[in-house]
Amino acid sequence: MTQDESAIAAVWDQQNVWSRSADRLKKAVEGARSKALALAILAAVLGTGSAQAMGRNEAAGKALAFAAALAAAAAPLFAQRGGAARLSDWIRVRAVSEALKAEVYTCLARVGPYRDLAGAGALLAERGRAYRTDGGDLIRYTAGIAALPRPLPPVTDLDSYVEHRLRRQIETYYRPKAEWMRRKVVLAGRVELGLGGLAAVLAAAAGVFSVGGLAAWVPVVASVSVALTAHAIAQRYSYQQLEFLRTAEELERLLARREGAPGAVGTPEAAEAFVAECEHVISIQNEAWMIRWTVG
Image (cartoon, rainbow, N blue to C red; front, side, top):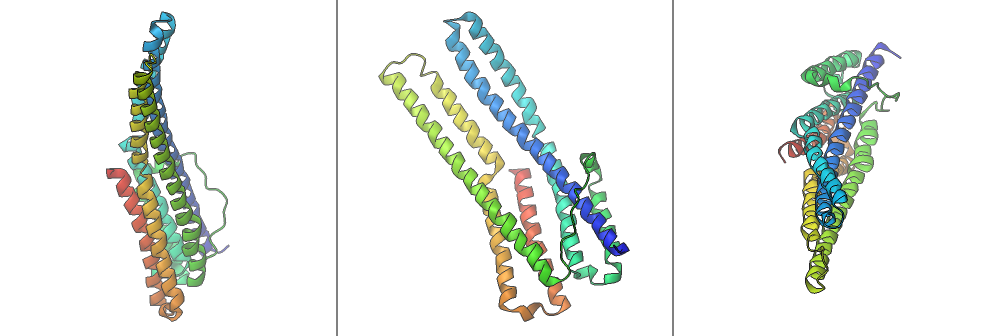
């Protein structure tokens, strides 16, 4: 491996470290939010159960009330771990990772500032250091994470860039992610509808058949439905689905334009403009969901 290739491989490894760090942070944020949601639901269920059990078994009622209080007290603690500060850190770590990835692919395609083959690796290393310096306060999240062994992307020119960067982003990332988010949106809607139906059945049974204790569970089911809906909104499933689809279609438009007029990117300047436009579309998608996650 040449010195130039070693420099590129080093930045590629650094990108993997930042990417894995972002994945770990995302998992922590989403895990904390899910636990907070589960504890809030558990507190509501146990609280209602304790009120109904108190008349039959005081000890059991008190135990349920105590458990409900613990769950209610713990929920905000977990919610804080998935709050704005940790969310912001995750987004910034992901931004560094994506910036490094874009630089590596641009370098391997030998366009833009990397057209000079002799100094491409050194320039990439310098730009990579600049990105990591900008995220200097986030380096603590990379502690204990090593880069996984992986080869450099097999990109050497514009054609291989299209195959291994552009097509791969469309076919193995944006389209599958959009479908995954669509399923989450559908599932959230079905759960919300099911809980609404359950609340209606409980209310009807309590009123028509005078079934004791059922009426107390109606607001619990309604609260659970509201909590799950709020969780789905916080996760921004619908917005993410839209952004993934929009980006896939925009990249496909660029790909179709290139395939329809291959001579349009026959010069180094045209190839540079094409790669820059592709990376711009990808970066716009990243920036869009980052802003959306931050401001809600």
